[in-house]
Length: 131
Image (cartoon, rainbow, N blue to C red):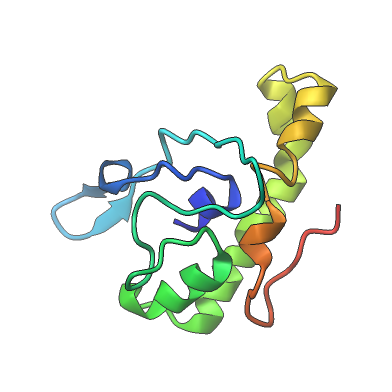
């Protein structure tokens, strides 16, 4: 869910979340069907509820939901920061791999991917992207 918020994939739904069962434990499958959505403004909502009745595409909502997934707040913040860091670090590589031109790469950055709205009201400890 955090990745969906960070990359502007607002069309997430239950069929996009799955796991492998090996007879003993569940393991999340790799992410799939990720489609960053163009935004007219910054505010966005997920198709699926994230926490209670809240579907806002914000990391604060994801962190609030963490206990529902038996994840401590500190661990949830670490997960968010790891994903933000990975997106920042791999951004140019992924743009090159997808054969995006510089204009498209720039248009996706901080609009669909790492949109400032996702970071509004984020709890202390969440790393805000610098570029």
